Length: 373
Image (cartoon, rainbow, N blue to C red; front, side, top):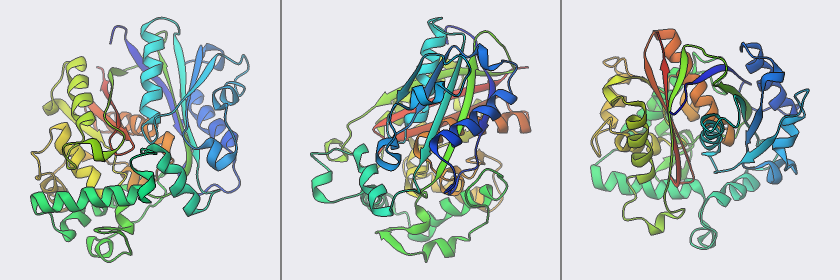
């Protein structure tokens, strides 16, 4: 970072089904919470960046940057960014660019999605806008199908079993029961996950992140300083369609973004005390850990076995991840940063990583946070 950027305030709604709340209501709740936790006032906000993917599809609402700006008394300049499920991390990356260039001193970043107003069929179709309209959509495949193909290939290459894969969701639900903001707050044993309804072989219902409503907000500043610093913000891209990639069992954008973020922060993985990674599907969690460097290819399941058996204290998706916490698409990347900050504060760890991607790893954002002494 060319300037010292502090996380000075954050807030979120609980993720879930909010039938009685609009996009505006959800944004206002997260915004008010972030301002209440911040040394800044509303008038200190120089710019607003809103992350959203599905507003036009699910709520007939575009122009969300300006909609959010109007929640502040002085209506600062605002913009909206979209990178599918990676929209939240891209919004934070854009905020960092404004702060580092000194075009702003305090920036509000909001991620919001309201998905339960639409049918499951319509949501599945809308989410496929994150895939390739020419190479993917004509086959009739959806994202569960895409990640089902990825899971099947991973099992073929590395011998992962169905029962082993169930440990991923089991661990995340074990963590999610402790998170008051999580959509699902109950433990689910691995055998229940293995027996849940088949969605896209070999993926079952409880391998998949849910449809969710929610908003998350944070305020980044170079004017106000707090012990919680953002040390690195990196984004990388890959092909949108998996048909154009040499391998289905690795997401190169994750490797690139993570390597660059660690270099920018001048730390190694050994320094990292908390990780929030993008487990849109259970198989993605394993591939993410391998691409980030926490495990060799095919070996990430050992991390989950150790956590499940109480042999590891690794703080991995302690929020419950997307699986238990919920996944209101564009809010997720921002929520992850908030959760990493909470973990660093609660456990007196120094460094943490938030990893968020869009599509099948086509856009990846990685942020490194530090709790400064």
